[in-house]
Structures are given as structure tokens and as C-alpha cells.
Image (cartoon, rainbow over all chains, first blue to last red; front, side, top):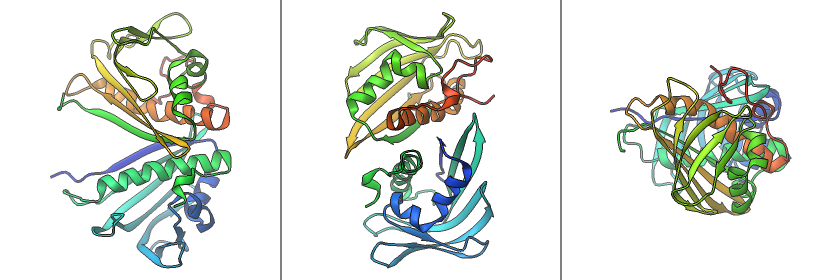
Length: 148
Length: 159
């Protein structure tokens, strides 16, 4: 049975370094990633922590590959919004390149179970997060409903 | 149609459904983010629909299947200028839903055959066109690479 995979491509009018910054610095992620500060020293093997506004660490992952500002991948556990379903061991890869004179960001999120019960919700989450990331980098403000 | 491959893309744009609908259909907007093309259409159910390239050639043609401004638009779409893509009738759906001060835009482009060449071709172009549309509505400027019809006839795609 095939495992579901989420792939999304967008183009952002900002340099690759800024996109990298937005994905890896807690001060940025906090603004567009549902309130999470994503913290890591971004070395292969290091932990990745998702810290909620109340200070609780919610999800964890591990850094796989780091090639700033081109490639970043890490594992992390996904959870449904109501907390009832959790899947460990999924893997997200951010590939940043320049095409047509703009920064292209490609996200691949894989490693879900074949009958994953979180995949749809996770995919929908990404669509909002990545839209807000683009808005933040191009206008200085994220989309409000992604600050949670 | 269940076996047909399809391309689905969702983006959230800080604008109103009315403005987004305008940008999806009116020449003043499409010229800026859709490679300088314009759509010729009366925008009623059953109306013929064409995308026109600046040099007068027809890029794509079809007809309006459903239209419910500013919420939903469904049309058939057949490529007219690339030999290898002609003959496959695909189906495009735009769904617009208000979400806070933004609009959730869902684009569904369904192929006309199980091995649809069209879906593969448009999958490479849509993210760039839609990113440019989003930039245009949110910042006033579209993305540079989508403002002109390219010399090699490949709009917004990398070959």
C-alpha cells in the first residue's frame, strides 16, 4: 500500500537566506507556524523542539540534513489537533533554490503510515503555514489566523 | 473521472473573495501573473472560454461548466498550442472560501486521460502562477518570471 506524501512548491520574493531564517529561527516560526517556536542548533542528530506559547514543548524531532541555505530535513512526530492521534517518524525536507529569479521553496513531508489518520490534517496545516510564511516575508506580517 | 490524475493546490491569500475573483478572470490582472495572457469569455454557464497569447494565438480553450461568483468556477480546458498536449480535455475548478481576512483558494486541475500529459505539464506551472497571483494581490507586484509570454512558449515552467 502506498504511503501518502505531501509535496508543495511555492515561490517567494525574498532571498534564500531569509527563507532559511524564517524556517529555523524561533522568532520567525512563532509568527506563522501556529505559535510554535521551533528550536534547534540545527546540527545533524540534534533534537528539534516545538515550543508552545505557554512554554510547553509539544513535539520533538531530530535533525537529519543541514546545508544552509539550500537543504534542511528533520524527523518529527505529528499529532492531530485534538491530540488523539500521533505518528512518529515522519520526515520533512525543505529544498530552497532560485528559479526564474525568485526563491523556490519545495517541501516534502513523507514517512506517514499507509492508512495515516493525521495526513490530511497535516497537509492542510502546511498549506496555511507556507502561505503565511510567504506573506510574512513579502509583506512583513503573517496571515493572522496562523499565529494561533 | 475517478481514475484521472489530478493536480490540487491550496493557498491562502490576504484579499477578499471579490478581488481574487477579479484577479482570476480579468485581463488587467491576468496579464501580470499569467504570462501576459487574457481570457476571452462571457463568464456564463456554457460560454466558450479561451486564453489568448499576446501574438494572437490561442493558448487554451474550453467552456464554462459552472460559475458562482465569487465562490466557484469550473471550466473545461484543452491546450491549443503544444502538439503533444492537444486533444486532452481537462477540467479546472477554482474554489474560493473566505477565511478571516484572507481567502482560501483551492485549484483542482483534473486530467482527461489516465496518463494525462496535461496534468504533468500544468503541475509544473501552477505553483509559479499562483505564487505570482498571491504576490500581486498582497504586495501590488507579481513575480517577474510570470509577467511575459516566454519565447520558448513554456509559460512559468522549467523545461
